[in-house]
Length: 337
Image (cartoon, rainbow, N blue to C red; front, side, top):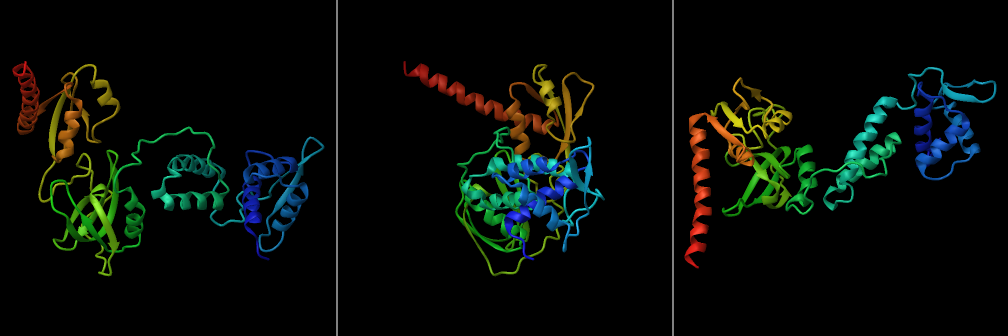
């Protein structure tokens, strides 16, 4: 017979209790737990009817009542591996899923994440798992970041292999119309980036979502990704800028101040990071890109580039240029007196 949503949710909760060999549930425990999960009181009669229904077709659940302490009995499956759901999670997996939902729940209420709201609700409905009502976790995010309104639509297009027509404007450049096959989406430093094949030049390019002014689905054929493996695509870079062509990874040697060095050790700049015999010195092997330079500048004045020579000179020249701005400002203020 058809099962309504409320009955289905009760069956899920009871199924988890009966398969849990770490805890015993008597009838009062079952009533209390189901009531707590659903948010309203469930009667003794309802739970007894549910147990009776689960023992019948189509479930044929082997629910056994075992007496303990000479009084009450607890309910469990005769076979603890049994579940009325073929893909049901174990108790340990449910615990992990609850933690995951707690984290995902942080993004609820953001208009651009309606798709995530649906995902969380489906998880809660499917497995009878609710997030903790306490606010215990916080993520760094910028809800006002331009382009977030495109995120859910672009994710859908990427999953469904749908070609996109992008209206894109880089900083200091003219607006472009780009026909692209979306392959991968990555977040870095508070921004979202789309990696897609540009149909015009047949290159995989990186598009910042905050530079996408508009997009729409195209009826042009999607070009399947046969160029890169995104599981390792970023292994040799910091950030999201992967150089085109035959650019090899180099070893970059950085020396830090004694006060900053422990932080670099506890939070490595890159997974290739190694400590060198010289005091407070590390080495990373990456392909040079703009994020590498940005990372180094974030440590100033507590870092010195030792190698390679060309990168040391580049950082030195940028520091000189920046210092000149401060000196010029000081001179201007002095002249105006």
